[in-house]
Image (cartoon, rainbow, N blue to C red; front, side):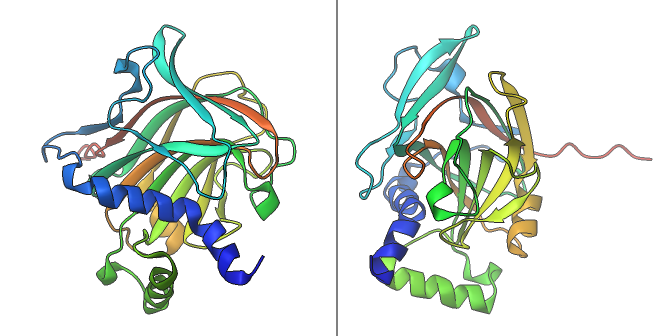
Length: 260
């Protein structure tokens, strides 16, 4: 495979999310500024058997023919999204416009039934996860370094409009919780390990991360606006099988600290 084609395959996820958001941004959600919680994925309010949760769209890749299957089911008395990935990769995505400085806390719930035995976040052939929450950021030339701006411009020549960066919150097989790992294909994407190993398999886990602080730590600069959120379970590299469940996703303001 030549270098250009390899780059295209590597960036396909980032590029496709960006392209979908460009087409849907005109009708993207607008929230009141005094809202303390933004309900991005209200899966619990979706009807059982619905093809897609409200406002979410399929995220597919031209180079990957087999897609992960998603469906809305009832689990433990609430509606959630179930993902079954069998040597496949695809996701669900939603266009948003969120200021991470104003809404820095992202919360979500997920459950994973099994780990991938040969996955490895540091290798291209191991770049699979039973569950991931994918957040993309729009390009703001005033908030990026000169070096990154040049790299972004080079990427535009090959791929058109792309996000300047993305963070994947992942359930990893062996990397330590809290680790921030360069994506095996591109340093425009950082992998943040929030769950690792088998200890919490089969249980619903409530997660909470400060996306504003994570972005600054991962990329070394102020984050631009968030323009997309996606969920994805993928096993196309490892050729394994994974089953995961996704609950509601929200972005929240940080409560002010009490006076001392």
